[in-house]
Length: 345
Image (tube, rainbow, N blue to C red; front, top):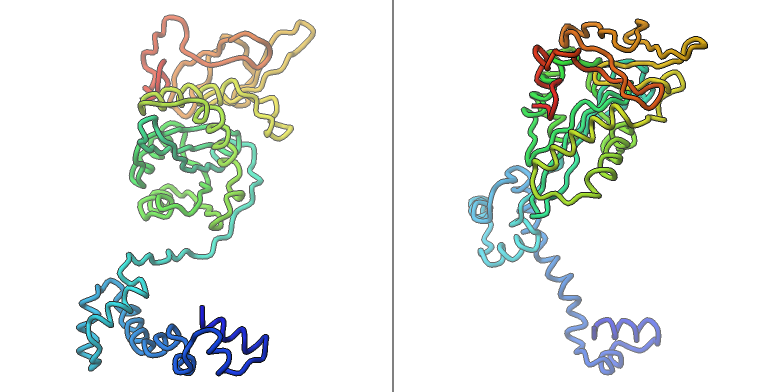
């Protein structure tokens, strides 16, 4: 502070050094000796350079390893001085190395309105009432805006992600491409190997630009505003049960105005995409299932050899309110576990 006052008096009031030091109460010897901080930095520069050279080659070495290396190189600085500089450089803290990513060229968001063209998924996080954090994995089919999976757990690794993709593969096949960000699960080798084995292209977005993965981000917003934010959960089972019910409602009941005009009349029903029209003056409901004209009560075609003998039934309410289920007396026998009544296993 006194040195600053002397500099102010000399520069602004044009006082001599003798009078300025007398007014500020600073000895002339201290003034001519210079700023202590600058003097220490100048004398410590060789030690700083030597430590930086060692750390650049051995970034996991601790203080004593660096100090003994300096002694072996012929430097005579004592350990107290080296330790002071070592702490000032914050080398005693955990060094975080920057993760290097290759240049990303994001794919266009213009996805054809067809099944299994492009999937996208992303992770979310929230907390239970007890403070326990949990993660949520959301997977959607961008072409038809269908939610494929909502996985809730305290930890979701890359191997767990691959197991979920294998389950979806057994139910509906694999997509042509998957749009993801640069998270550790998506850049893991096990995920890259799975995509390579199944001939699936990975479309990475650029770091820090979630708008390039807009479909899943919009789904995450709906999921958070409609389910996570209005509820206080005490157990993971509550999150899973409500998420499963919300997924069914999202796919079968929610109107999707974001569909292109050619898809506005389509309703996503599981793996079936049914278009409802009123045909003829009689007003009899008819619909297209996988390109085939069908009426209420008809058996759906065996989709992908996975679900035999499902029947289309009216749920009431108007055009478009149809769903699929087993015919009378079928009692869910022969259906895959994920298609039976209740939560998916």
